[in-house]
Length: 79
Image (tube, rainbow, N blue to C red; front, side, top):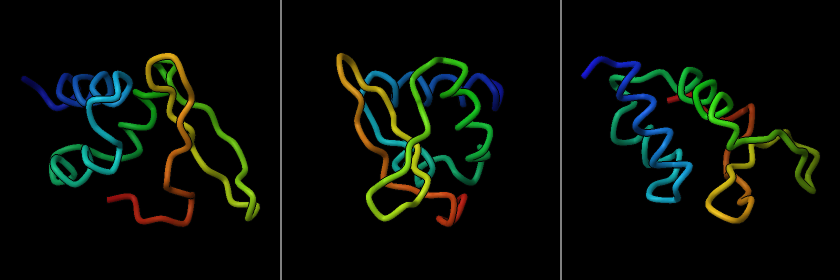
């Protein structure tokens, strides 16, 4: 499997609620780029950008039948 294929596989697992974005980066961050993962998540229509109560930009991931706030901001490390 190539890196892009693995990125799509991880994104689908995140979308289905089987793992978090943070888990995917922790497990495969040495192989995949977090920005590419975010782009793939967006292409699968399972993320949206919001602003949290502290005024920070956050990404919200949609899991089956709901939207779940992510726990990262633009200031967080990418890997």
